[in-house]
Image 1: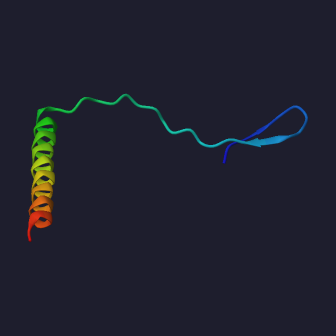
Image 2 (image 1 turned 45 degrees about the vertical axis):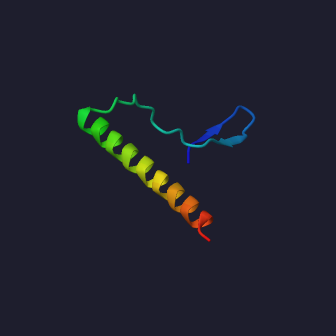
Length: 59
């Protein structure tokens, strides 16, 4: 742990700060993967909603 000593002899303990880095935009392959995952998730949620309505309306 990084400690600092002040003039009066007090010791302060500070949290470690993470290294900051610049985020890079996704490349074409990653963008394609995100689109496929988004479509799959939308179809899954739509299917769940359809099943929920079908079951709730069944007599």
